[in-house]
Image (cartoon, rainbow, N blue to C red; front, side, top):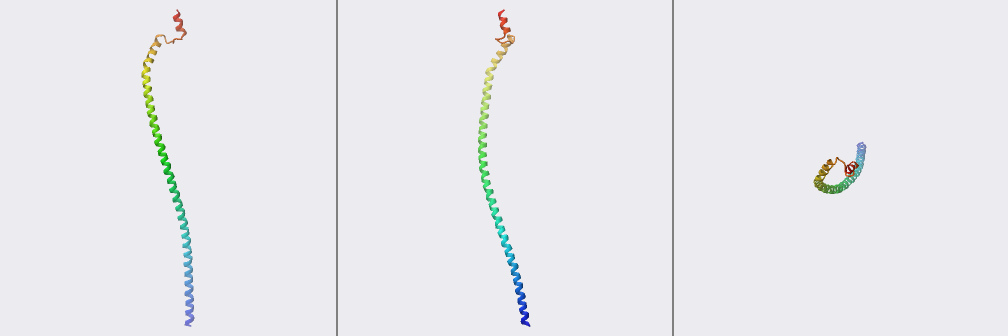
Length: 128
C-alpha cells in the first residue's frame, strides 16, 4: 500500500510541476509578446527622433536663410535711408535757392494787381 500511495503522490507532484511549467511557459510567451511590442515602440520612437532631427536641420537652414535675408533687408533699408537723407538735403538746398525767386515773384505779382503778363486787363491798360 505504501507503493500505491507513493505512486499517487508522484503523479500528483508531476501534475503540479506540469501545471507550473505551463504557467511559466504562458508567462514567457506573454513576456516575449511584450518584448516584441516594446521593440516596435522603440522603432517608432527612433523613427520619430530621426524625423525630428531632420526637421531641426531644415529649420536651421531656414533660419540661416532668413537671417541672411534679414541682413540684406537691413542693409537695403540703411541704403534707402541714406538716399532719402541725401534727397532731403538736396531738396532743402533747392528750396533755399528758390526761396528768393518765390519771394520776388510774389512781390512782383502784387505790384501789377495780381494779373499775369498775358492778362487782357493788363494789356488794355497799357494800350491807353
